[in-house]
Amino acid sequence: MTIHFAEIVWSDAPRYWLANARIPGCLLANSAKSADSDHEGVVRVDVLVEHGKIARVMPAQDTHDDAIARVDLGGRQIWPTLIDVHTHLDKGHSIERNPNIDGTFNNARLAAAADRPNWTAPDLRRRMGFGLRCAHAHGVSAIRTHIDTYHDSAERSWPVLREMREEWAGRVDLQAVSLCPIELLMDSFGDRVAEIVKESGGLLGGVTRPAIGMHGAPQADIDRQLDRLFALAARHDLDIDLHVDETDDPAAATLPFIARSALRHGYKGRVVCGHCCSLAMQGDSEIDRTLDLLAEADISIVTLPTVNMYLQDRCSGRTPRWRGVTVVHEMIKRGIRVAAAGDNCRDSFYAYGDHDMVDTFRQAVRILHFDHPLSEAPSLVASTPSRIAKLEGHGSIGEGAPARLIVFNARSLNEIVSRPQADRVVLEGGRRITAKPPDYSELWPDDDLPGRTAAAE
Image (cartoon, rainbow, N blue to C red; front, side, top):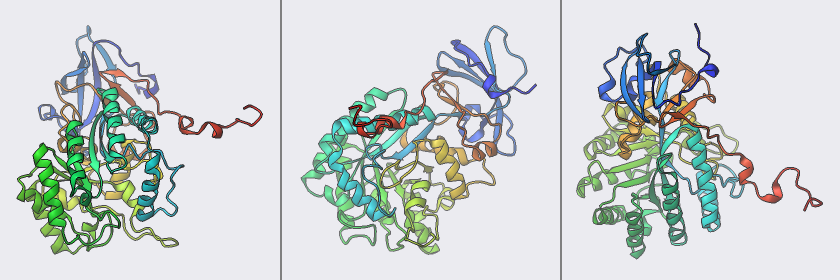
């Protein structure tokens, strides 16, 4: 008998089975991978939830102890809640205040800089809180957010980040990375940035383009800038996460400099690089040399497919010719860790989005051609970002892990990719959450509320 999704009764019992479920093998912890998989790499299992944790994962069977409650999923898929390992909560939901006039990277940068004086503590709390509520409702349980860290914003933004992290702990776990052109770290401001990041339990980051300008050929003193960055990180024992070569200009090739610097400073396995778009525009021999360095330095990569497709190769009146993403397939073949993430959300760098990593996943599969087979695709937004960000208890399903789960009204990966999955159910501590994405009206100025008139005032 077919079990309709809307008719499933979700258990509030402290101990119950999620029975007759399907889980992608790439999202199962090693101890749970013994079950046979289908052509999509998906296994049929029963999951025992006990006091908010996963107590057991076993091959699906028809009978269980009648004394334990049973929720029959009818063969539908369970995933762990997802991870957005590269986003910008401090910029989010500012699109109506600082629109990008033509959708280009340069005007995105200028619009964000012009709006930054408006980022007061109350403004940041409102927009960041809105973004976190969206992510939580959609089934995101961990976020790494880059925080604009300039002379005029560092002391305002990081205290708010710390407040939000404490407020959301256990629902959406937050990591934070400082963000400014790395040349700004060369003087005493760099020391202060590293101190703030250390005090905040964050990562030291930056962008390898000039402070005034676009991504392009590496600056003459790029090695000196990177040595300063790595020295600051080493002094404070900070991991590093950088924005790199976000352009279609093949001359933009700072990625090899970063890899060599990581090796020079003993930072193997402690560096993440996001974007890396220009690598896809370089010749095969240059790509191979760069990938050799990345593998040797154990650098992880984050691709941002939706945002880079939006920004890259944008020219008025001309259809774009490329997708804007890095060489994901080639990296994975080399054993380089690659995650996909959401990046910007409704700001000058990306006018759309809702902090929904299921949406990012579905688009990434198409943009990256990460299909045929689909078996490893879910790892882009769950198990791999968990390893990159060292997020214990996130990104996989296994015994002893928290019961933070997404249940889809879909049996196959094809069905998950083919529909928006707006009816997904999110479980937190084994209980269904009631959270919904917040209403946009919370972001509207009072004088813009529909129905408000001068007479009413």
